[in-house]
Image (cartoon, rainbow, N blue to C red; front, top):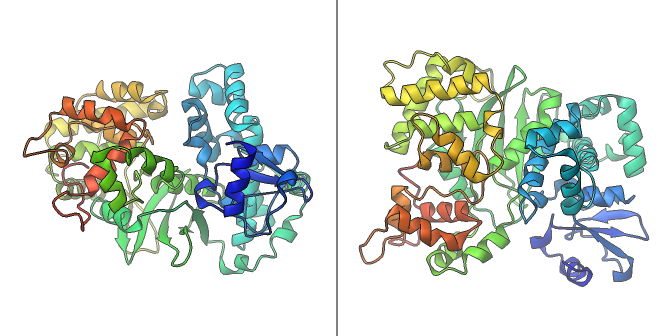
Length: 492
């Protein structure tokens, strides 16, 4: 976007551009989201940056009204390289809190010099500045919305000491922690139960997402109740749970975290955003898919559908293996049986959330007899679990969709359908597409003729690079009843 296009978006306070750029005002030294409610500055006083980190690196501090820390994290989804996209996920999860740039570049399978060049090209600044910006914006959100002490906020946002935290806040935001903490919302939270905001750009079809998750909820681990999704988790040996529900009046989801370690908050926030696909550029995706007759009416009917993610790739892959050639209900029952026998006990406020999904270490040699799981499925589960025990970074090894699908298909009991399903949900590969799925084939039949998987693969070429979203729209919408959301009945 050029300068004039950005300024027009700011004048219109167009929500479609929230997160796609940030406005820095020369006269005030502040940077804002395009939707900031403050008085619009003169065009000649505005500079536009591709990321909050770039604006911060240029010496601007975040606006206290529009709160850039709540902006969707679009840079990972609107045209940056796959390497930068994956790096941003690692940074959001706090990887650079304990590691350095060479280690991150090595993890991504690229040279350090090339990695640094990519970041400057796509983000307008370095990875270290982006990581610092994420830590500072996380700290600002915690100071604004919770009653955590300043020391707790420093630890939760990834700073190694209170002194470094105070120095960074003063240097980059020109504020003291106590000046941010005056916000009245901070009084609404207690340390053992934090409620934070997760923003997104509409449209966002909560009802479809909740229904999709509800029929796949693993008994004892997940539950949808009274318009709220809750699940258990374990991070660094400590169990907890969280609940997500839509705000009644704002375009945000509310995330309540129970019994979590302070330092795990950024990871929980990052995974929750991924689970609900809050950072997708849904306007661009819908516009692209709507150009094709097979998709246009589907997008128009339910424009806010997202690719629902997963809390953990291993958990979802086990769930997908159990769901091969059976109904969703049957796969859910089998998952619940595994959890009941081998899951770790969890102490949570939700009475029906009693367990943590078993780890790879537990399932590697677990007795799965008598649970109704076929021997081939048992072998596939054991093999995958042992693979993860030997190589904990297994799911992060592939650098692109083709490599990931190929890597998973080499494992016994896993075919292209399962691999693509895991890629689209757990790995956030936007172009993953399980073309052999029976429901997808049924949805695309014309004049009573159902296409073959190869034919559907050819048709889907026009939907690239958003085929995962096309799959979600096909699963959701039944051409025989355009007034009703039909849930996918064959896929896990």
